[in-house]
Length: 263
Image (cartoon, rainbow, N blue to C red):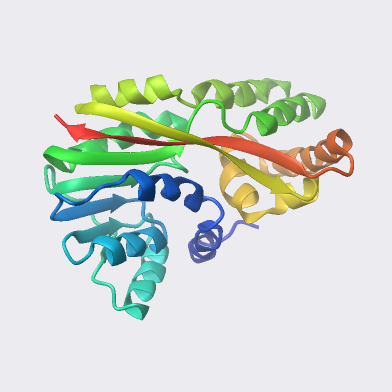
């Protein structure tokens, strides 16, 4: 049964520490707001990291944050109220050239939509303003994609096998992300990457984890109907156990932070 937007918002909040943190640790290490009067955080989720930035920089920098849904907005505003934060959460579309700094979470943005996402992040920054975004790049999810490809063909869903291949080839490389940023008008583009490992006890733990079940696999299996998705998910769990035996299952991502200025 499909989950409601409210349920999805709570799940997004639940996985933030395990998923989003892998990227925001890079942000916290490399982001400098010393010259910024205001910052827009795009795709702020349920607000946890935006509140951290407000606690760190809020005395000098006004923090604005856009959430992906009204349900996430409600959670973010409740969190802000609980800690008396001045961070301003909304779901509005902001004007062009409005912010000294822009930080965008592209960690769940589909690869096909990354170019448009980057363009929108650059759009709202002032000329000379800092722009930063984080996302997984090529070299991520390889352990998952190889098994998923095998399952799709085992289940006689060969016509969907190209979906697994597309997932591998669509993930942008670092050089492609840098090129997209330059095409969108960014200058002095830099990237920082770190390999992050996710570990699960067995195949069932992997396919039923909120991160995988509700966020990663739906993108991977978007072309399948519900019965086909169930078959593939069950077989994926069994294949993981058959391949790894009593060992835990791990997959890796290449978490990447891209930074630069709007030219």
